Image (cartoon, rainbow, N blue to C red):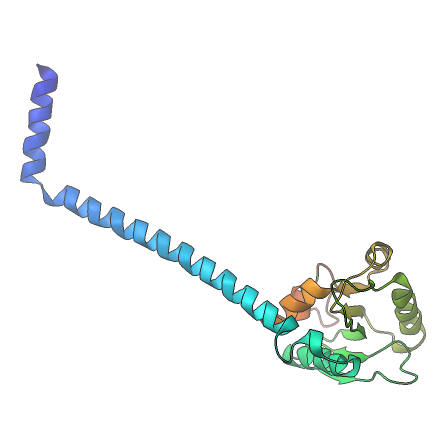
Length: 201
């Protein structure tokens, strides 16, 4: 009997205050719509990132279709986009440096560029490239951030040695993110030296 009375009282209350459940339904619908829209926006953003990544690497004028020298200039231009003072210096007697740059925080970068005509199935960049870069950097360039950039991949020994010797390795995936995201390279690398001026990362 008590349960019946309670149910009747609840029904009467809902009839008298009909706008409350309606308001709750409208609010719940709005929240559900916002959640769905947010998920759709995330999916669309992910698809756009993938599209820009493909264009940066394999699209018309993309990095895969360049010659080695054009690839060096493209790396230089990416650094300039990031706010660096950068110059392409590759050529005969380049002392293992294709691009030299100074970032907005005062760090000096030396970059060796290795463009692959077959970036997926071709040979990986070996550890010897890293040996040459580090040796030349110690003797000549004195840069804080030695980097090897490729549109291909690195061998396992190169990856291990680069980690041990603090040589930044920019492989195909990271290069694509750098070119397509608009983010500066130092925000994408896992670790780099602190800025000389104490600013930034």
